[in-house]
Image 1 (cartoon, rainbow, N blue to C red):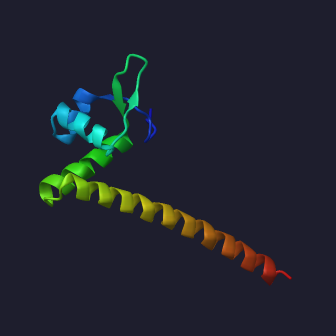
Image 2: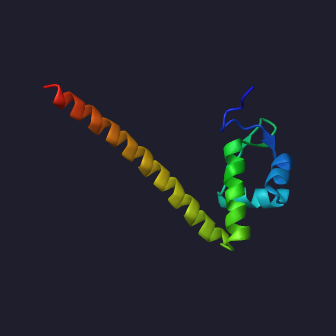
Amino acid sequence: MTIPHDEPVFEISVVARIVGVHQQTLRSYERMGLVAPQRTRGNTRLYSQHDIQRLQQVRRLVNELGINVSGVEVILRMSRQIEELQAELATLRHEHEQLRARLGGL
């Protein structure tokens, strides 16, 4: 069985071990808006594989590159904007090719 990339299934204790940080650090990252885990009805945090990858990226930026949390926020925001722009560009290129194909048929 394959778990969807964005399916929230991991509890905070498991994520802390996977990422290699204390649970309190994860709570702090959540307060800063670096990650937004889903919540159960009982208010338990559940993280997805996507959340874990994001947290690993945060950890690398902080621990390996020495970037402060404010810098990490900027980097993550800019990365998201780049991904959105790349997706938009891909869509526009596809539309452009479709229009060229239609015009070529005329």
